[in-house]
Image (cartoon, rainbow, N blue to C red; front, side, top):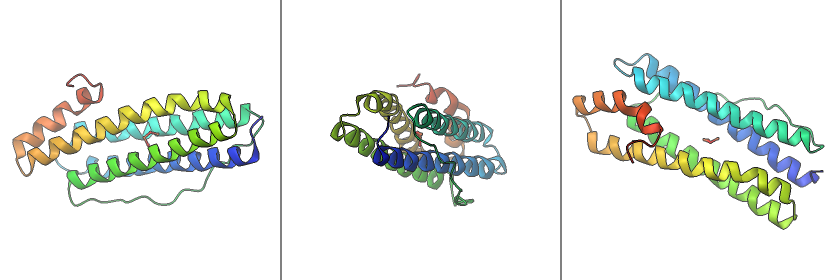
Length: 168
Ligand code: OFO
């Protein structure tokens, strides 16, 4: 059984994951109407779906442990970006915040000796390592590319393979 405090904290994480999903959905919609960003568009939409899955996983866990998962209202995310670089900077900042949220939950689970929740959260800890790695890699590449159009072309072509960590 979850403590009231843990239940509330997990519900805060539900909000974060839902907001991540919305933020990446908006990035996908923006990329979709830019010329030549088909790969990036696919990447953002896929990530939006993944964040929804992260949210659902939390919802199932909260309810399974005798709590009540609250489906949150959503704030409108940022809709437009001055550049792809700016969108990816926001994505990275977002992921860092999500990781902080997960770390706080892990800390709370240890304080409360809630080892089931601690165990459940390890999946998120590992996921965040990967998400931050990917976001950082995208930012580094875009930094190198600058305004070079052929570089951007290759970035868009390769982004789905970068996601799998194949180019590490
Ligand atoms: Fe849910 O991992 Fe990204 O935000």
